[in-house]
Length: 148
Picture 1: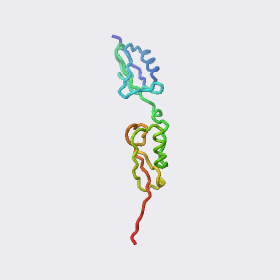
Picture 2: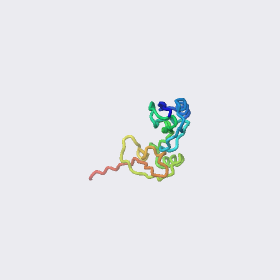
Picture 3: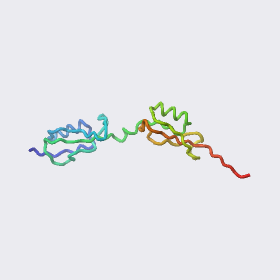
């Protein structure tokens, strides 16, 4: 049984992982951990591995590598609905592909938000919340009554 030291491949692309593992003498399968869902290998980087880097193991055993999307991959172009009236906010959300329910709720008086406009959206990352619910919190005018 040939014993090798597994390289630490954290931060490497799939091709770099393959090259490093084979270069270290791994003869077994290099498996991809798919427990976190689909991965875009064009931008994903290795973020976890089993056995871990610098551990010794048999060259014929398999290695499992989990790939993570870089932070910037999750910061996709987001259409901001704050400051728009309800009709325009709804129109833009639908045009961006939101298919869930859109509910309008009063936000009360907010100094930073004009009356009749969307002050905030829940959830904030509504474009990742398809087929669910989006709440538009809209600033309503306050009526102050004083006794005669």
